[in-house]
Amino acid sequence: MRPLTPQKIVGICAALLGILFVEGVISLRMGAYPIGVRDIVATLYHGALGQWDVIPSEFLLIVFKLRLPRIALGILVGAALSTAGASFQALLRNPLADPYVLGVSSGAALGAIISLILAPHTPGAIQAAAFAGAAGTVAIVYFLGRRGGQLDSPTLLLAGIVAASFLSAVIMFLMTTLSGRDLRGMAFWLMGDLQSAPSVDLRWLYFLLIVAVGCIFTTSSDLNLILTGEQEARHLGVNVNRVKLVVYIAASVLTGLAVSVSGAIGYVGLLVPHAMRMLFGTDYRLLIPTSAIGGAIAIVLADTLARTIVAPTELPVGAMTALAGAPVFIYLMRRRMR
Amino acid sequence: MSSAAGSNSALAARAMPPRSADGVRVRAEQVSYAYSATDRSAPKFTLGPVSFEARERELIAILGPNASGKSTLLKLLAGVLKPLAGRVEVDGEEVSGLETRTRAQRIALVAQESALLFPLRVWEYVLQGRYPYGKRLRFESDEDCLLAGNALAQVGADTLRDRWMDQLSGGEKQRVILARALAQQPSLLLLDEPTQHLDIGGKVELLRRLRKLADEHRYTVVVVTHELNLAAEFSDRIALMHNGKCLRMGSPVEVYERDVLQQVFEAPLEVEVRESGRPRVILGGNH
Image (cartoon, rainbow over all chains, first blue to last red; front, side):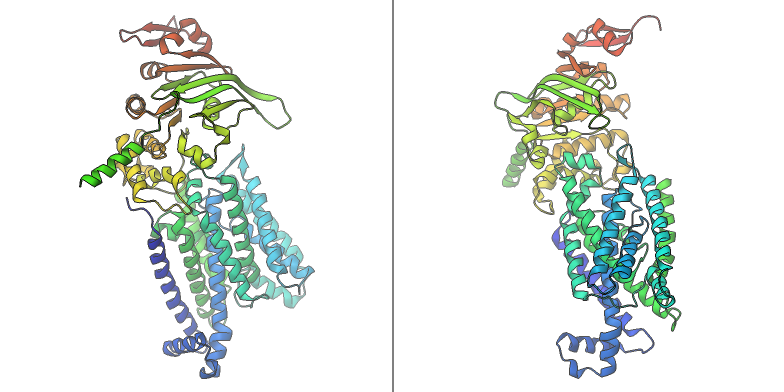
């Protein structure tokens, strides 16, 4: 028996953060204006020490104004969606659960679009509306997915698919009210996009991310037992209702904040937690932090490919994740049916 | 070496349930319960009022036909359901007043099904039984590992510890589930139809182990089962449920009367008493 220790979690997370850092430096290098690794490291070093006048102006613009904010946004979105996916899989006791598949991302997108139409200049309105849309959709899908008082896996997925298509139809209807210029940007955003800078300070979004991931992490040993069945978890002393409420709110916040800045990026919440399970096991005390960092790695990679693979044209990052995620979803579904 | 052996024996002693003051482990007094489809509709099923008592080292079988209230009574004893009237006490304290983790330290309920969403190793599963004793995030201590190992050894499953749960046979899985319940260090072990998916060899082995846990480790064991003959062979007393009432409670030979069994199970059952003094139920008449 080798039970999980805090040291093991810290060690694995540190290794993953190292991979994320290396990937970040490579991503900073790539683009229309190539910069050498040494220059990037020097620029980052001087930036970290606040020595802005030492940094050449073109590096300052490219690294700190263009590429780094986009990577920071990718890290935020990847961590949020991936943690939300792992959480929904435990909360709904369904290994195929993901904010995108369940229609939760569509709910958040609808909320964000309504707030863009009604209150386009109110700070934080998009995030709040996206959270409300995500939370509302989870509640509806949860109740539609029950049969005979129990959550039923196929019914839940069907409920998610129906909710996603209904919400997409409403989004399409609302989009017809927008002008042609807004429409293209909105269509790109809906497919998942990291090009546009968020309307609120990124630090606030990171604060929300850390709080929400932290809340879910504190329930991770409870989630381990909920995965074996809610009744059994209750018998072992888990306050199931409290855990479900915390995870439900925190995962909805994560989906809402990711969708509000990047649109509906699919399959990250499915792909990354399953990859982390295969690498490190099913214990949620390790799965939550590794999914958060793994999600960040996945989105930074997908976005780097999206902006370089057919340069100078850029693909939406959601298209990249869907290309990788959809086959994995089918594989997992078929393996589960066998 | 001697100190390690000393600490092991201390832990083994701690794995034993505490002695109850008057010998009564669980007592249900005139408990009743009702299920309804909705809050306002008339009850679809009513249990009780039922009184029940189990003492230290006792193995009690709850028998009865389907929908007679066996599992409902077990859930009331476990504190999973709160009685509409009456009270349930474990070691002298009312169960519904216990905090959920304290309750899990005293009562282990082994439910009918255990479906895992993701694969888990046997030792990881048994360590879950230590959850009620952990702090926040509940990282398992060396003591938890030792107690989980002891629990596996108690059910003869220590060789299974590195196997995957979904690769176990029905009998092996049932033993591991029992080990997780023992890792909770409860004083009261409640099992809801644990023999359901086992072959006859597995059924006998499980009941033999439960008997041993009661005799040698002072557990109070309450088992819901449909196995009339195995219950007669291994239990100290039997509670016979019928239409939500406890029709009889006593030793197997007191409870197993031909007329009573025929009425309850609506089958031509005959009872014969073996040399050991324990009754045996056989199918009688022309069928």
